Length: 608
Image 1 (cartoon, rainbow, N blue to C red):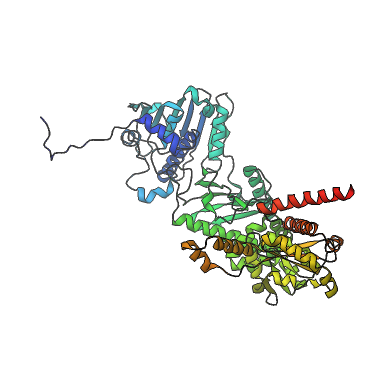
Image 2 (cartoon, rainbow, N blue to C red; image 1 turned 90 degrees about the horizontal axis):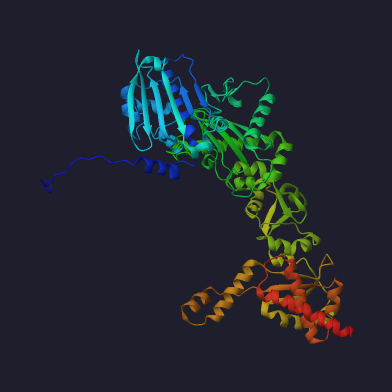
């Protein structure tokens, strides 16, 4: 009989366990190796619950792997038969979610109840034997779960497990040998559990003595005879974990969230913006080796290893959940790094110098947004100047006015001539540099900072006498005509060094303005013509300044053959453009090639 149209029946989802395990393996967990982490985590949480029942008990975790089985045994709180039916037979429910979960959840590492399924990544059957510590004379309970979704539960005599706790046994599949060999199981146990607070041992089944997985606490949790011994122990631990000798180690301690650890200062520079992953443990269990979110972007000069109580893992337990607690931890750790920089600046100039030599870009990034760091470190930061690489403090002592360029190419155009003219110019083309140089008066009120203007430079170039100017006028006219296509004027001056035949004074902004003006001329009429015409200004021209002190220029200005004069002017322009190290336009590249070939042809004709 069909159901009425308005009737409904309650049904339950049919779970394809194999499909769910495949989903976990491809989209939740990064690797099958996490099965051991999940088993260790369940054991640790069971021990945490056992200590709540028996605070002074001596409990631990024992691992066994001989190539045929992997076994994890704990002295934890264990499970009753009702617990097994409730928690192991229901996907997604955790034994930690008891009535008091709101109060207890902070005591456990896991909170999602799907960790046991990770065992199906390496085995087709999970065998669990458990005995509860909460129920006196409780029997042992056996649960066998299979990858096809079926399971069995039976009660065993108490002799099957004399003491409370849980044993999980896996029989690995043939294709899982990479993750279940004895040596690999031992390595994974050390990898994930080296900082666990409960004793963990490993037995490889060869009859030897079981070895400790976590023989001693983390170095920051141990007592050391002297501060120096503590520093050396922390540095040695950082080197062992990260594979480099730290420039220094910064101890991290945030009692509010139960976080302890170290930040290791990298001994070499890293590319700006490249973020290193950090090792984050939660209650001793390794959560992630690539946790970028624990520190702000500017702190790419350190790598951290921390152990925290209150950070919240995501469902995969391989990264951190972005919440208010993590944001507060990130801010607090950033403050610890600032404090370290401040201490180095105040008391260890040698360490500060080595740090800035390697990581000045990171500090510049921080100083732009942090006034305190700016005041402390701006005088120490190195900049590229016409006096070489030096600090702003040194540079400002010898130059009453500090000029700063807006680009690297502009600095390279003018550096040699400005230095010879006694001008103090700083390369402001690198990231953060121009902004920081302009803030120098905040540190040295007597210093004056200004952007370098082409007129400022040309004003320091000496004019030639009137007779020389008149004698060169015909050549200069030919040169201006030849270079008009580049919106370039030509002038004759004297400046040092005499080895420089010409200086091309131009700026990126001027080139953009000329390009916009040219587009406006080409787009006469129509909406684009109106828009570009409204933006049009008197486009500043480039200047090719020829150096009368240079022997080549003195010879060139005497050329009276028009074609040769034009070719020599083009060659001088091309050489000056290349010395500026800015990208050449196609027309400039063509000019350089053509002028070279023309001069070569002229020389060959003359010789013949």
